[in-house]
Length: 229
Ligand SMILES: C[S@@+](CC[C@H](N)C(=O)[O-])C[C@H]1O[C@@H](n2cnc3c(N)ncnc32)[C@H](O)[C@@H]1O
Image (cartoon, rainbow, N blue to C red; front, side, top):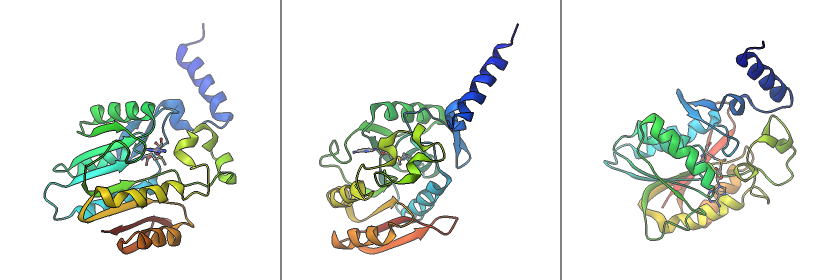
């Protein structure tokens, strides 16, 4: 008789050989030293997103009980990491995908984080609410970018990867909507592609944000831009 563990192993080998990412086979991935459950409904956490967390924590320094909004929360890694690393913060996190919200809620429960998760098309279900900090890792790969065919990306949710346009559409919507949801001097920080730093700073400056900057990831690649109101 073949042991069930061996059968499972053979199935994983086959799926891995077909290009499916390991995180989807085992159903989990690590981010900032914590284990998050993942399913094909959510993006697999990327180490470069840690830059967004580090910058957010710096901007929050000295704010007693900050209100934070995470747009496009996916598995919840950004919202949950901030909740655990800034325990006085009140965190709201949204995603267009009900399935992603369910994964994120489950991760928050397992990791002991308190986050108000809601389904929303960016700011749509947040009328009248303001935050001291808005963070986002939005879909920013351009439609038809050959990278979408590589490294297991075809197995990840396309709505998490691409805006279906030039790669800046979601960033445009986030920058345009953020002013109405930020407190005075509140910061907007978002992750973007290696070649989107200049365009991101231009969008921020045109929308009357101040001190627009771009920060590299650990590989030295432009990764996060931000500015304050
Ligand atoms: C790049 S993934 C980021 C996921 C997670 N924050 C992370 O860093 O791993 C982008 C997320 O944005 C969500 N999304 C796409 N369009 C959206 C929209 N119109 N409103 C809200 N969320 C959206 C996707 O479902 C996906 O979970």
